[in-house]
Length: 282
Length: 172
Image (cartoon, rainbow over all chains, first blue to last red; front, side, top):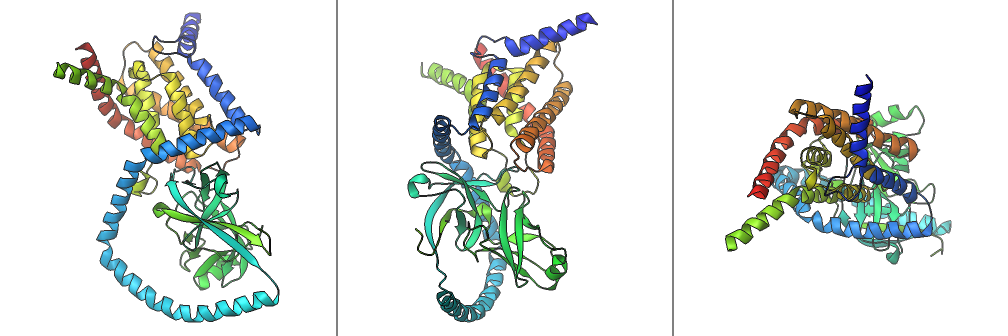
């Protein structure tokens, strides 16, 4: 029995402490170093922050260059699929266009009316848009984020909204000097205060880690309302981070509590980062 | 003379190929997500590190594995050091297996790999979910671990072939 334990101890010590000819560091020293790095990377000291920013800058740039061939394959795959579904898409787009033409006429009137009412109550919400290129779109199964080529030098700040044409795709969660990271709506950690139309109910939209979201934190009678008609979800503007009225997604009446986002997060190339100013604030 | 130079280039290139694979896969976060097959992901880096640290440690330095972990953390967006810690735990298991194994056996290696990926994914889940309070999907981790386990034999054959080529070239 003691021989068995001795063998275990010898094997254990040999595994952790002995270095082979080509190894410069023992396993134990590197394991301890990684533990120190985990602790240090989460402390808010300025030198550590600067080192972290430097590491991020270098790795994001390198990853952008190295992931070019994979991105090319990705585009090839999506182009092939688009080509195969060309006729089907054409038919769908044609019917959608007819509906949109009708809606546009009504919307123009509503837009004018809305502007008139806002000026009456002296409400003034300004936003500035910064165009950014998506450098890396690592939709890992665990965390869904994208890296953008705009950072503190372009006045990007934490919490800013990221949109694809007019649709919300996420928010900025990390800012470096020349780049930033945005958390996509589909990530489990994404929680967006929203409003349902036409029900006019305040909800929180949460990501699921998949390509759709779900409604969190709301009243129980919501489910019945969702079954009556298709529901569009907009940002509510609560919390003051996002401009109210940015479209997020849609819940079809036959899909209970499944939010289909308007934007396809796998096809993001350029996005807009929005900063929100209330009144005359700059 | 030229053929001699060519041969030495191939030899050097082949010997660095596992390391090149490691860094390309951490920079790319190689998981075939663009195929858009729902729930299909596997961790190529775990297979790569497990095989090469078990079969031919001369191809991988522990320091390069540590650096690969740091890169992976930055690319994925998790606290720096978590992946390095997990990769090094994987290395310590392979080092232990190497020390206690007299006659290598594929099935034993394969099931040791299952134990190892369950161990390191559990450590990662504990660090991310319980310490850093980052919400993660346990199901995604489970699916990822299962596919990683299932894909091991495929890569075992490919890496065995590469390992033999490296050994043959080095003995030339």
